[in-house]
Structures are given as C-alpha cells and as structure tokens.
Image 1 (cartoon, rainbow, N blue to C red):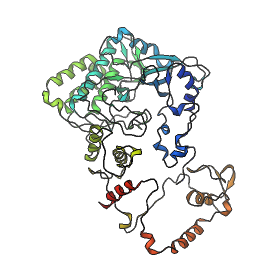
Image 2 (tube, one colour; image 1 turned 120 degrees about the vertical axis):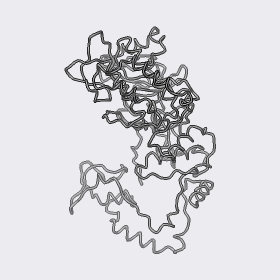
Image 3 (cartoon, one colour; image 1 turned 45 degrees about the horizontal axis):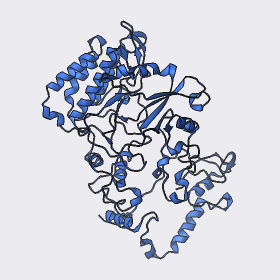
Image 4 (cartoon, helix red, strand yellow; image 1 turned 135 degrees about the vertical axis):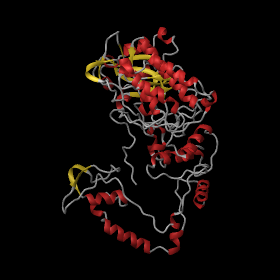
Length: 525
C-alpha cells in the first residue's frame, strides 16, 4: 500500500505554533522539534526508510489547536500553553485564585497558573486581537483513562474528597465554576506516572514510542487532583442568579436562557453527575471533547454503590432540595464513616473491563520498561523491549467488535496456509463512484498523492488510477495495464513457478533472524 507524502506533515493550524516558536523560546519555553521552523520529518530521512510513519516521535501532533505542550528551559519542567482571550476566558479570576493568599488554603485545587504571556497581535494564533494571551500551566493527566483507571476504593475516595472540597472552597468565595464536569478534573502525574507521557498520545512515553509506565495511586498517595477550564466561572454576589446553559452536562433541570437560577446548585448537580459515573451508567446526555486519549466516558465500577445516596442528594430535580457543596462534603464524610477501614483497600474494576484488558493494565502498571518480554518484538533492540505489550493492548483497544484473545503470552496466530481459504476485503469506499464510458475523474484521491495523471482540473482515467495505486506505477497511463490485463499477467507469472516454490517461506526484510524465529514460535503454537 502506498503512503501519502503529506501524511504526518504540519497542518495549517499547527503552523500557527511554528510561527511563534522563536517568540516562545525568547520567553524561556521550548516546543517539540516538530514545531521548529527548520523541522524536517524524521521518517523521510534515509536511515528511517523502513520505519512506519507513526513509529517516529515527531509524527505526533496536538489534539486541539489552541493547546500546546512545551519545556520550560530554566528547570526542564513540562508545561501546557493554552491560547485564550482576556475578555472571554475570565483570566483575572484565574489569576485571583492563584494569588498567594488563595493558595494558602489546601482545598484550593484550581489549576496552577505559572505565567500569562501576551501574544503579538500580528501572529496568526492571536487572530489580530490584542487580548490574546498564553496561559502557562503544568502538564496534567486526565482523572482516569482506559489504561490508568481507579483500582481501589481508597483512590476514588481521595479523588472525590479533593473535588468536593474544591467546590466548597470556590463557593465560600462566592465563585461558581459552572462546568464542574468530568473533563475538567485532572490529576498531577508526577508520582503516579514516573515515565511521564507524550502530550500528543497519553498512552506513550515522551519518546513517542514506548508505552507509558503507571504506578498504583495507593502507593503514590496522596495524589493531587485539579480543576481546569475556568472560562465559565464567575463571581456571584448574594441573591444574584445565573442565566444560560453551561457545562458538559446539558440536562440540569433548572438551566434556562432567560430565568435566573442558582449557579452554586448547578455546580453541585454537575459534580453529582461525576459521582454517578463511578457506579452506574449515566442516562444524561453529555457533550464531550475528543476521546483520542481513551478517556473513560460513562464507565462504571464495581464496589462503589455506597456513593449512591450522595449522588441522589446532589442531583435532586428541585434545586431547593439539593444539597449545598458544604452539605455534600458532610454527607460524603458520613458515608465514609460507615465503611469498614479494610474496605478502602478493596480492589475495584470497570464493570465492562474484560479479563484480558485487566491483564494488560496490570502489566503496564507493574512492569518497568527495561524488563524483557517474550514475543515478536522481544529481540529487536531498536523497537524497545516493552513494545509487545503496547502492541497487544493497542489491538484490544482499536480492533472494535472483533476482540482478539489476549493470552498471557500474547496473541496466538495461525499459519494462513493451514486455513483452506483466507478472505481479503477492500474497505473505505467513500471515494468510489460509477463512471460511464468516456467519462473521466477530476480531483485528487487516495493515500498516494504523487500519481502523475491526477488533476483537479483535467479529467483523467479513474480505472488506470486504481492500477497505479495497486501494482503498476507506470507514469504514463496508456502504458499501464487494465485490471483484467494485470490479472492475466499475474496468472501467467504464477503458472511459470514450480509448485514447490509456493510453499517457500518468506520474511519481511525488516525482521532480523531472531525476530523471525520468535514469530515462527508464536505461529507454531
């Protein structure tokens, strides 16, 4: 299969960060090599000729164009930059919550704000607005992901304790967040993810290749949790209500575009929805962002049913009957006091997590990256010793409805020759079309972009396009065989082979002899 020469290159939105890379360096922040003005894709260099594009760390881009990761030059700390506008994102409120006086309160779990850098008005990222700034914050990890879920009751209790107290702290200062929902809760990964992670793919280490190594939250306790995204937050004097629809949860009963409602009870309801997600499938619709980092959406755990009374009290349909944030914390403490101390160490798992997925997660949390593993990639030093675990876990994640068995020693393959007939199929037919005789195609299609006859203005023969992409890269379309002629030629070549030659083993040139032996052992099982 051909590979587009444009695959993995800088997108127009990413180029906005390339433009300000020298400016950021002057302010003491270094972007990844991908966003340097003189960057050239590493996969196009001669020594990486046989590498797949996604195997190169500079292939990974960003998830949202207005958020970028960087290194603080002064101390090597990893930070996140978010482009916002002063009049839209309530930056003064975020600065107030980060003032020394407010930081004295341990309940304050507002995301730390290191610096606010005004952007030059003429740069593309500023959109010609003088109010554009970059918020510099620490690199945080989502509350929980598929690869790093909660595993003990104590971990959930510690998280909820901090999250509820954080809302209590805000409300005591008459600040309502108004988006106290799942995606705005983050975790400090300093102690729980010793390997750190890549901002463009949270399942990989910063090298962009090795799988992330996690540490049990109980062994890293206490873990610090934060709230982010304060653009909807605001100060509300007594007897002043909120108007409008805010947050990821859109079914808060009292939300209205014209009738004022209590913004503090809105926070309680939204946080109650987060509590509900821990022990049952939520029926309320939500508006989430991209889930490319495998965040847990509507995933429930076994063993957390004791939280149900708290959830019900925080989500009463009538705001007047709903608990306040302070009352919610008091009820939470009462529920905890009714638990046996040993129960806090009770192991919990996602209800729909298969045994195979559990094993993959446990291996990722208990196997340091230097430990060798048996399998296809075990002897290939250049691919990292722990690549097989990442490979197998990725298959479990991405294969969709066809769940492959994940045995303790990896996937077991069956030799294709031992199967009577293997069926191969073509997918992705959105570019396919019917063409009557003498009707050409116009436009640029497929993953291969260097087909000589493709044009956005001049019609070309679409059937010869298919042949070029598959097996016959003659530049002159008239010199290419048709599909029928190509099949005939293929049969002529096949008939010239000796029958015994069809049973000859073949190996990819990319595998060394040891890898070939490992694969033969795997297939022979």
